[in-house]
Figure 1 (spheres, rainbow, N blue to C red):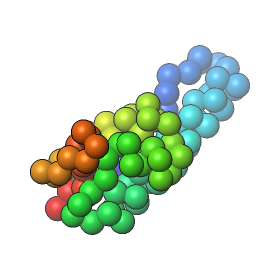
Figure 2 (figure 1 turned 180 degrees about the vertical axis):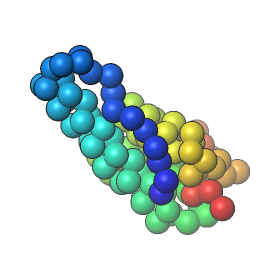
Figure 3 (figure 1 turned 90 degrees about the vertical axis):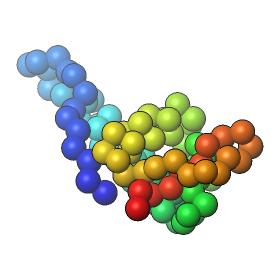
Length: 93
């Protein structure tokens, strides 16, 4: 899954701040992979944010952020399916 992103802003000259930014980037990258793989496993029926939150144990706000990142690189697309009032998304064809 191609994704280019830079580190979160950090205080120049602060090693601790730089390390924290790197840790946040790595954490988000790992979550993004989990979300992408879960959606891929669901095939054409896709997955909703609520389903990913429950199945993967990732908080909704983090799932939402990962969806935003995946949409930005056009890795996922909406389906015509809604479950539980939520839009289902699948891997872009």
